[in-house]
Picture 1 (spheres, rainbow, N blue to C red):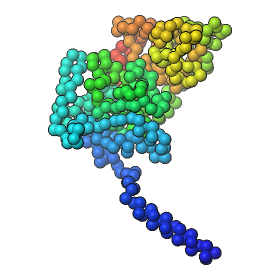
Picture 2: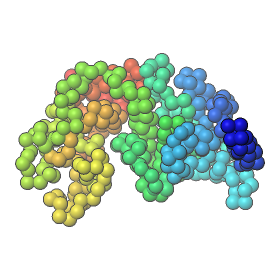
Picture 3: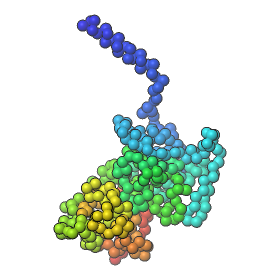
Picture 4: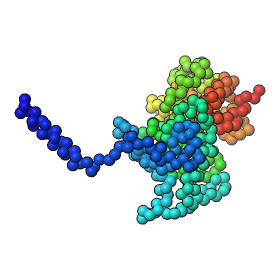
Length: 396
């Protein structure tokens, strides 16, 4: 036994020596580094307020790997996020030769007014002001959402997705829908379990007041849903609010409305009758870029020529509900209500013929919407200020 142990010991020693010779290739993990304490610039009012009131660190200078991409023990996830390019604001100031410019003119137009940024601080402050006035101003400390705020938020120059990876991992249901990344596209925000990163690329993502509003509401919906889904806050919503809808979750719409046997799986269901079930209309059923494949859990597909349907153009623009579709799940139903509370207008502001105005919704839907308004307000989200048209739900 003694003779056997000696070669084993020598082998272990040689392995250790080999490891030491490779030490130059090792990099520190920074696992124990408090990156918020070290890098959060609390001289900026919003950064200080978020840290003091919500315990959230907002970084505009960050390490993309450490602060966003890296997820311990999930190498595949880290590889996926390599497809996301997220330069810092200071990268705008780096010249082609690697030198750093003192000023960079960055111009964008908002509602016909031209804005031009010059210094680094101006660029940073513009991004922080945008996040403050379009997102964080609607959240109040002390509520349930306050307790669930993400520990880290990043502000970057722009976000570019090269189109690889599985996009179904991300919420892409807000009515603005610009968040949906296509191959080689700029997007407004991106997130994973580590943090959420917001773009300040005003040149590529904004050109009018309506575009600015759309961007704001997109950020609000996705930030709010990140908090709700990651913390299972669906379960904190009073059960009685949607109790009458539970038997229908994920069941087939056509079966409920006795649409079978139908001549086509695209048999149309009356929208008014659908709304009476408490589920909201097909605004939340993503139908703008081809119909959803019923066997593919929400992925788009382009209908073939022999499908029993109207033309592809008419089909893609349709807001009808079809017999083959299923009612939402519990989680999707809650998302749909929050989406509608953020976006749906009252009649005088309704510019889209496919949208049912708030006051024209059935009474049962209005009751549920008022219930969700109370829940979100109690949680610390000022939904009425996001969408002032919601006041029409309280008019008699």
